[in-house]
Image (cartoon, rainbow, N blue to C red; front, side, top):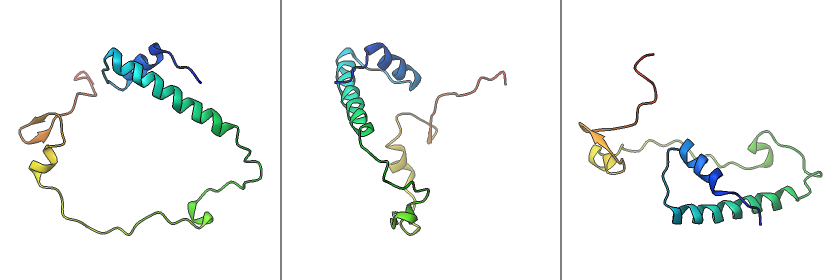
Length: 100
């Protein structure tokens, strides 16, 4: 099993501005370890015989759907998904200082 320490997870959570309890950190540590272990397994796969592709169309894969217009969400329904609202708008944290 690939190990990741709690300090690394705490640093990542600070960068993402997320807060976790100690129990959640333990769960994340186990999950991240599983993910890193899976990535290590993938790096062992021999892909030397595979040709590189720059476009999915070269592989015959067309995953893009047709662009069809749909009606927008109602404001109340849209705001239900936001954690904080101000005057009927989504409130977001400041990303730039006022001294710019």
